[in-house]
Amino acid sequence: MAFIELVDEPNTGGRLIVIGVGGGGSNAVDHMMEARITGVEFIVVNTDAQALERARAPLKMQVGAVLTKGRGSGGNPEVGKQAALEDVDLIRETLKGAEMVFVTAGFGGGTGTGAGPVIAEVARNMGALTVGIVTRPFHFEGKPRHDNAKAGIEELRKCVDTLIVVPNQRLLEVEMVNKSTTIVEAFRMADDILRQGVECISGLITMTGLINLDLNDVRRIMSNTGSALMGVGSASGEGRATTAARKAITSPLLESSDMSGATGVIINIVGGTDLALYEVNEAATIISKAADREANVIFGAVIDPDLTDEIKVTVIATGFKTDEERAQKAVAHETGRPMELFSFEELASTPAFARHAAGKKMKVAHTKSNEKLYKENLEVPTFIRRKGMQKVSCEHALGDA
Figure 1 (cartoon, rainbow, N blue to C red):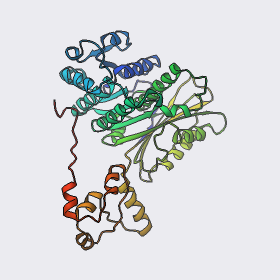
Figure 2 (cartoon, one colour):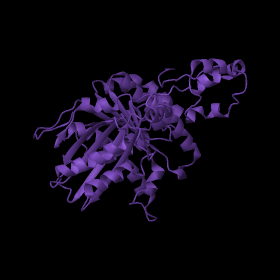
Figure 3 (cartoon, one colour):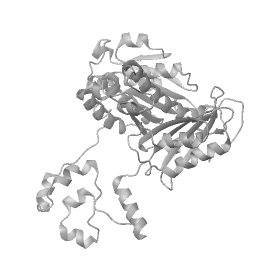
Figure 4 (spheres, rainbow, N blue to C red):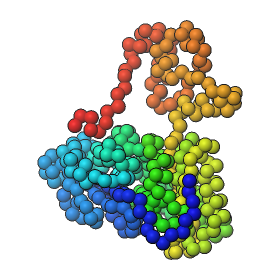
């Protein structure tokens, strides 16, 4: 439970590490260092020795020197993966003692997309709370990079506690972007979104604020929660707290505009010395109402003397229910009792007479993973359908090491 505590000492929250993987991750770390994020260690990882020389991070790790001979991965995620596996012992040694690890990268290329999941899995297996914060490419970057990013994101999802994906294309919908925005500015904006994600979470632990939280509070919200959404908003003047909060929960950066399924929410509110308690309450209330009724909500409030008449709100929503769980909850709300639903796998493999005997309703939630089964003809006899079903296995990044 959050409590108000006015203290002068720095808030120590254990060893927090931010690892920028590949060129995009290294650029993001450079941007975070320029913004002077405190309380975290910065590391960059790359196969490209020249790129590492240009990086500002105090600790630089070259991986795959034998495989790539100190050059880049050529945009091939498999090369990036094998490069990380070549130096997996070095990665373990570097992460020893870390309590929280952020893995950040621009997905779509080779090193970040391929090595990111390997590094994340190492961190998580060592007991660190592991958070992936990555970008999805702009449309103009082309289909190969989009395909790489899609596959890499699915692989990374298996290896982290929480995954935040920022779709770069959505930056075009942000107020500050217009026709005169240069491509360099656009990529810096993407770096800044990654910075805000890291700063929102780490700041709750490391920054001294009006409302202080520790790593256990954050772990409770982010451990084993899968995909997450992040939204940011800022406002000045009258009603600034409510305006900033509403902007955060309707941010173009949210891959989905629906936060209603979130069972965990982190709110970080930053304001000047004039930040009022009722404003913190207003913002937190608006955001809490947008999440699940039973959501676990934690929030921090930090004073930044450099802010005048402006409030910044960052929201990270986690723990989204599956489509099947949402369907069951909706029926339970309407009828007062839960509905038993067949999964598509059950529907495709269970004879009709057995389904009727079980007394389950013939209603199945539609998910992307079930689209193929949707198209199958369920009038085909069960024993034939069974022959066509394939068992899906989840392969971890280190599974074939």
